[in-house]
Length: 211
Image (cartoon, rainbow, N blue to C red; front, top):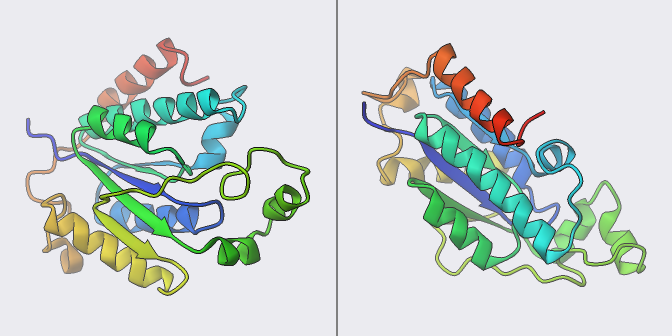
């Protein structure tokens, strides 16, 4: 059976718009008939990576866990969307090497704009010294050198960024252009049965990745 699964790896500064784009993209792909796993950075931290801190070692382990789940979903023919900051190039490259169909999308936004958007007030706390090791303030964010796509969320409307992501997926042959109007799964896309999905979840639970 052919594998039409892939991973869209959204990376960028905190409050750059990754989670918003991930949710919109997931809804669009589900509407087109694709099984989607949306691995939101904050939700992953609460469950999949519960107990990990924010040292470089723990950040890398967090990304390795996300990468593993994304690979399993992609190998099953589904779509994995990740929206973790994933600030370090080396670990993102490790994820790319692990996942067969890997599409890196750099969600570019100036830190000044991210600070203005930060409803949680985390940047304010980091600038005041109340949070240490905060990405973009006193911990580095290493921009991708050769991503499949760069979206500029300070300049583009959300739907424009989504359109550009979908266009990139079509250009790479991961989506069919005919899906735009028909809202149908790509030709030949494998259906993921309930049994296959449960088998994958069982594998993850057995390895301690899910409660």
